[in-house]
Every structure is written in C-alpha cells, then in structure tokens.
Image 1 (cartoon, rainbow, N blue to C red):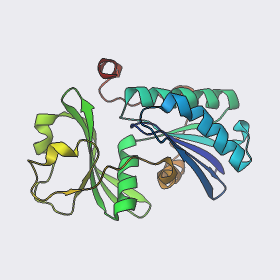
Image 2: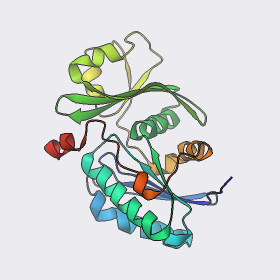
Image 3: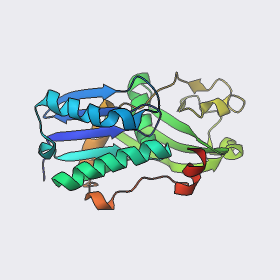
Image 4: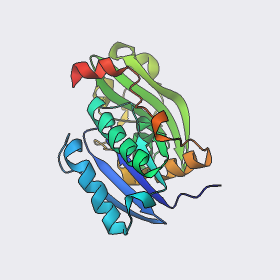
Length: 227
C-alpha cells in the first residue's frame, strides 16, 4: 500500500482558517485569529508549516481538505489552493466531510460518542448529520443532509439524552429538545483531522486533483446568494 508520510490538512469550511501538517508523526498547525480571512492567511500558513517541518511543496504526499458542506467562500478557497498545489506537484487530494470533521473534533473535546451536527446554511436551511464516534472510528447514523429549519424537529431524537448537539445551528433546538446537551462553540481544527484522514487512506478515497469539487449540497447558486 502506498505510504503517505507528509500530509497537509486544510479546514476552511467555517469562519476559521485552520491548517495542519503531519510529517512522519509530528503535527504542526496554524489557525487564524480572526473570522473569514481564509484568503488572506492560507498561503502564508502553508509556507510557514512547510518551513517549520523542513519540507518543500513537492515533498507532500497527500493534501486533505474539509470539503463541505459549509461556507461557499471558505470551500472555494480551500479547493483552489489545494488543487493548485496538487496539480503543480502531482499530489493526490483527499476530501473529508466538513460535518464529520466537526463531529470528530467535538467527540474528542467533549469526550462524547453520539454527536449530532447542526450547521446554519442560511436562507432558513440547515446542514445536519448524526454520528457515533468511538476512538478512531466514526459511524454515520444519518448522512449529511440539507433540510428546512421547520423540518429539524423531525430529524432529531428528542428524548435521547446521550446525544450531544454541536454546530452554529444548535440555537434552533432550544425550543425542541428538553435539557439537550449543547457545547460551547467549537470550530473545526485541521490538526484533529488525521484519524479521519488515516481511515480514508485505508479506504483509498484519495484521487487526482481534477476529480475533487466542493460539496455544497445545496448547489453553488445557493451560496452565491448569501456570500
């Protein structure tokens, strides 16, 4: 099986730009201090991490991106940068669900197994997905879906107190679920993506750059209206 020793991870699906680089077993990371400045910082972050790890761009074995659903602008920035690097240096790309990244991050931070992700898609719509997380395994109980806010009540288990709800759309749950578990706002961190990346590598989910496109779920036109 092909080995991937030097892996760049990019997470820009939300308001924070997060980049991580794993070289052998060492992880270096960089994260924006301000929201929605992906285009301003992403290239500098990548150069900084490469220099810190003593690597050149063509020494990267794989580029993994949190590929949506999420912010139209953030996803376009990540895909544009990742594809440019991949094309120029013949590096494969690996797309990872942004909702799975957030669920993984929340499971690690909160030490919870059942994670239900609710992300505001604007225009009275939400991205939702339901996961069971245990160690390095994430089982998808409900695949990522775009729903109307008024249909949220039909997508959740109101009396299951084992579920922890995360994402910037959880505010819509307050009147629906009694004593539901809600965490503080959690922003996905690229440095926590590597267990998902390792699993996806085993499943050979990586491909050439031209085959990767952002997963908007709702289509590009939807995001042009809000950004």
